[in-house]
Image 1 (spheres, rainbow, N blue to C red):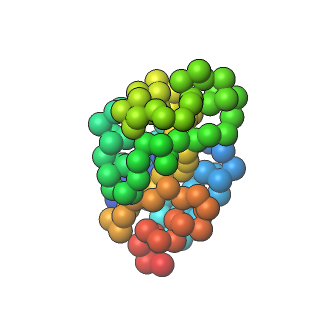
Image 2 (image 1 turned 90 degrees about the vertical axis):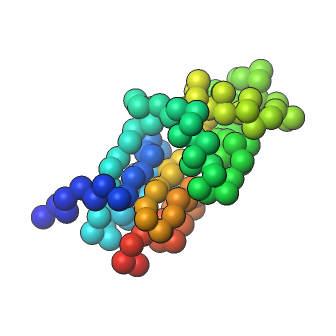
Length: 124
């Protein structure tokens, strides 16, 4: 039996990312069916990214995914960029946001490594 969707848990998910898939499986294995937002299909807004960063106590530069061809090819991807500039790039290119991000009543975490999801899963 699949648990019903738990609107208090959200995962910002990239189905092409193995870590993201593993975190989603860990949430489901714990008995929760989160709201799953495929952020490549439903991109982040600047306000949402700012809110998530604040909740995680991170800067945009810390949330920046530095792997992949896009990051490597961006002329803008150079040291010294401000958080505002990184945010602009992340909104324009959501694949530049490290993943997955999980939001629960217990907090918001970038779940890298995947085990970090346990820090915010209710009932663990």
